[in-house]
Structure formats: C-alpha cells, structure tokens
Length: 313
Image 1 (tube, rainbow, N blue to C red):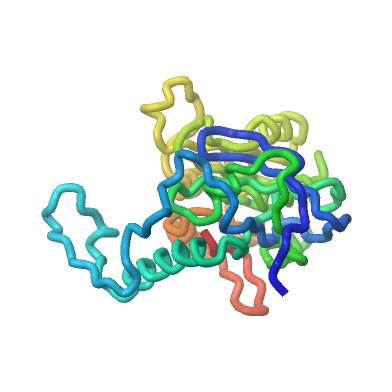
Image 2 (tube, one colour):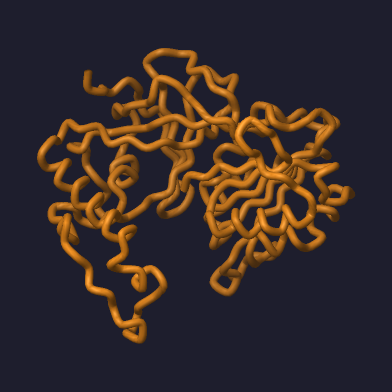
C-alpha cells in the first residue's frame, strides 16, 4: 500500500536563509525514539516547492546521455567537473533525471529522506528536525514550502545506533558537527544532559557565518548554567562576519588545538572521552585521522569503539 500523510506541521522557525527548524506532530503519539536516532520525512511529488529552488520542469541532463569531460584549464572548472564522464557521475545524472521524470509521471509518489531528530526523546508533543535547503534537491525545496497545519509523512519507526548508549560510564562526551549535523546532539543534550552532573559534554559546532549557528541561544544558555557543558561555536568566514568575536577556522584545527583541554581541564584522550562526529564528510575523515593517530578507535560492526560517526550527509 502506498504511503500516506500521517503527521501535521505544528511549527516552523527560520533560523537563517536556507535553515529551518521544523516541528511535526505524528497522528499517533507518543512517537518513541532514542536520542541520536533518525526517521524518514516525506512529502508527495505534487507538493509545492519554494520559489528560489532550481526548476525541475525539465531535467538539466538526460538519463543515459554521456557527459563530455571538460578541459581542466577551462574557466570555472573544479574537482567535481573533472570527474564528469565517470560511472559515478553518470549514475548521479541518471538518478536526477529519473527523479524528475517520476514527479511528472506520478504526482502522488512520496519523496522520502532520513533526518536526525533534534527533539527530546521523552517529549510526546512533537518531533523536531533541523533542515538545510538544497536548491537542486528533490525533497528539501518541498519541505521548506510547508506551513503550519500542512500534512507530511513520518516513517513508522526511528532507527540508528548513533546514541549515547555506546559511551561507557565515567567517560566524557565530545560532539563535533557541521551545519545541521548538530541535530542529533540537540536530542542527546535535551534527553541526557544532567546539569552540573558528573559527565562533561562538549559541543563543537561549525558553520560559515554566526547566523548559521542554529540553536546558539539555547546552547549558550546551557553553557552559562551548567558547569559540565561546554559550547564551542566556530565559523569559517570571519572576514564576511565582522561582528564575530569567537573562534574561526576549520573544526579539525580547533580539535587539534588545546581548545577542548582548555574548556574541560582534561586531556583529549580515549581514556577520558568518546568522540561523536556528524556532518561534512571531509571534516569527519580529517578528524578521524587525527583521532586514530592518538589512540581513538572507530566502531566496527558490533565492536564499540571510542569514535562514533553518523555517515549520511
């Protein structure tokens, strides 16, 4: 049986252009999940899209067509363009064209994608998501057009093992994320943080500009009132954000500095900390390399390590 709408939008907050907090109320409550898990969101292909999204009335490429490899010395050609014509790029081309064709052929087709939940796991009023707009995407331009009382689809069950269950008693937690990779950490903090308790939590969050640092007010307040919580916001474009007085640069450089030790008074070692990583794949891989060289071990199957990653992006 085809999927149907089973939840209602109850709130929508624009954090910055292209960033929203979306709250939905499933028809059946409570909606049970563990902090850090994700669930599928969906809308039908016939749903409206935001005006600024790239058009999809015609595919920008044709499925099955071959791409010409551009000259690497041509103006504006970057690394992504340099791989045009490969099997991977052709698969992406075919998938884009198929998705667009599918929306035309079947307007009732449910477009679905998994998103981390940002709300407290014990809350039974709504499920919250932190979303970024992908102009060329199939789903987010439709999610961003949603208004309060609009209907959406929510998957029947939250899944995922990116949770604090993996952290041994007595260990501190370092959460590193870029952009909307902050979402699972918000759920963890709202569900598991005991203010002034024995376990220390550190959130290192990166964005391009200070106005893209979602949940900044909430996290700053937590850091002010809870001695065991530390918030380290970082931006990458300080020259374009002249009022910013905090840290700038790439997260991997912040982690490699003494920032965490300065905040917590503890050496950043696998004996003291478990590290969680969510967001940009480049950031994740770089931090993994740094951490593994210092004795941190990644999860592998059922073997739980001290380095935990959320891979989807």
